[in-house]
Length: 169
Image (tube, rainbow, N blue to C red; front, side, top):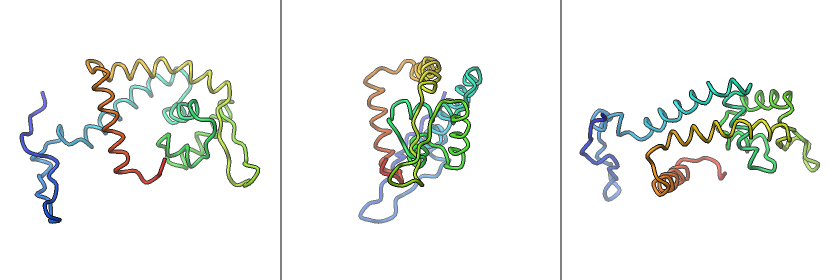
């Protein structure tokens, strides 16, 4: 059972001064939200990576196909942001997905330097085959959490994303 931190974690500065920051030791890892989010996502990725092997997909490929399955077309830069993959890794991932016939890269007529990435029917089929596994994994993660709690949680995540994002997307 996680220890209970009875203090205030989010100590805001008063009158423009310095906040009275608690130490990490006072807060504890189990009450430090970035640590918890990192643990959750690391476990999510590890669990999915095991299940992805059966489909000849990596986590990067799965994220790319997931994003493209709900987008008409994206540039490599946009895809890197949405799939949360560094651009160098994204380029290698796209090479592999293109070899598998799952995506298509097309130069833009007005600027040949920009490539639009789209998912092929084979890519949609591959993602649709894996989607039940991905969705069921998400359901297990949110076991004992009702729909209202889920909506509140995702609303909070959106606020956090706005606070920390570097891109408008």
